[in-house]
Length: 319
Image (cartoon, rainbow, N blue to C red; front, side, top):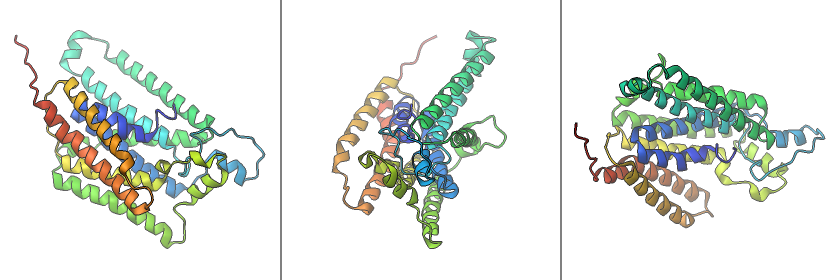
């Protein structure tokens, strides 16, 4: 459950899959995933809470905690990024399904079953979030309150960005934004990321304090991945923001889902083959290339791939 609910999966795997099927749904998944992870990183740097696997050692508490290959994450503990990302991602699907069951076609076929479907969706949502939270606590990556906070904030962010029925959501206004407004928002997110990082340094705080604790108390330091660091998360999110901004406003194209899936799969395989060519011996080059990677992938999956797939015309059914 921990591996499946990794925030990077939503951006690198789930977003390409659903963007090839439905560009609108794919863009919502990307937007919610990137904003949720970006906001989560800011909160982690602000709250500066520990993770269980190093907290027991720092507090000199004699509790033998078993460490797994996915235990040694490098970011601060609160709120849980996995739970926050999973709850935000699942809420996007709930709003998407709710919009479908509100359509005339569903009402004609399944009249009177709308409430039952909604109840079922929330039951599935609750079960999955509980499983993700348990997985995070079992591997000693989070405390209970960090998981609860992540769930609440994830739903709040997703509701704010995608729920058309909410009074305080910006979903309707966001759809009407021009390209320059989205670019301004991308610049704002990137500027705030850099400002928050350098503010820590200016006031004598170390943005990488949690990384040092991870290396200090991880029994197998070789399992620590650079892809779990807060800085990498911000670089990835900012690349996605700029890619989404340049693809905005999204064009609704009709195409066979199979064609879109095949095109997205081929594109995804090509980008994975180019991964080993990225530099790893220089920090600036490493983060620069990953920024360009996520920018390019986002732009292609929301513009070029749907355009290629739309060249295969959808046959219209005759009455």
